[in-house]
Length: 447
Image 1 (cartoon, rainbow, N blue to C red):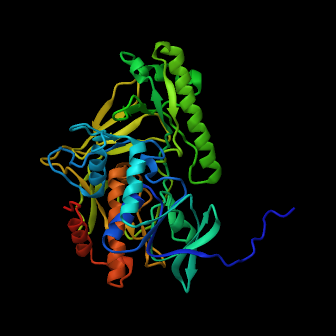
Image 2 (image 1 turned 90 degrees about the horizontal axis):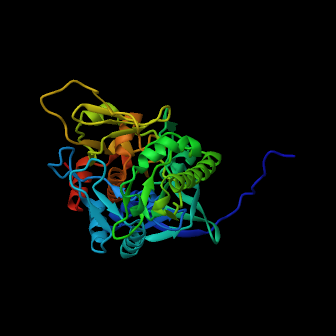
Image 3 (image 1 turned 90 degrees about the vertical axis):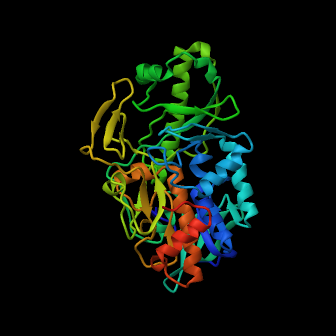
């Protein structure tokens, strides 16, 4: 029996033609599309699931981090992340936390889904939901389109420029742009929404999970969560999933293992906190992935550059979320801060505090992401990367990967696509000052 099938060549219909096609409908991808649309480009966005928002909605990770520096003294970004939060605030769908390095805003992910729909429609962006990117389409050595699988079958979307915001760099990888894997990729987490969480008031539920996790087959991990604003639901992030989500087999295994761990936690708390009467209300449509592959770009952002707050002339994003390493080879997490301090936190054990560098008279309070880390090395001058797979080493990725940072890379990629098309330039040759001023004029705070 043959080990493969032959798929005959065929003509496929063109479903749409745009100035820009965005692959991936996370907030990063949507923000890229909105930025470009506000600047006058026609835009189509391809998302294989049924809604926009990515990790924030599909994966139920319903918190975003601060727009202020590490000292909470200076605002370091505005733009579409803040705009979306303000739209949700009008619906009572946001809760604020002041001066907290863990998170600044908790939001209702269902409300965010609908708000993103409205933003896409308001800006005239063509939404291709339930449309899975299948392959790049190359004409005369140039990226000219993408093949997608839809409910109606296979078709093509033609565009002049492309942004890969797929999270895993699917377009880049299938277009044979160089990608690489981290030596110690961070594990994934399946979140869940629970009802009846008020019944755990006064109960150290984190201690119960630590003490009895082995009985329920739970790996030692890190448990946290947040109430969904204006509701009785609690978002719990307490699973630790080690399967490789970059492969189809690993992705499937990770989804099943994550849900198994959610049920195990539920059963554990039913047994050891029986008075709480918890109910499992919702599971994510997709596991929350921290890291798979990265794409090789013109600049690889390093942990030293992040931790020392290096300034870049082509900076397009500012962040202050600490280096947050969820270890793949041991329990607990390591947190490194820009002030030189470090904490190894393992639930059930005292925090181990130290310094990753000697004390200095002054400390940086934020870090930057350069535009060059979004520009893939390769033959296609009309392709940009945006999101967690941009070029960054393991330590840098552990800080920059959070949504408010990646959202800014989406905005930058959308603005860069406009400038490249307007000025008839390859993505690698657009003027960084023009890009930064375009972002500033559009409402971002570029320092």
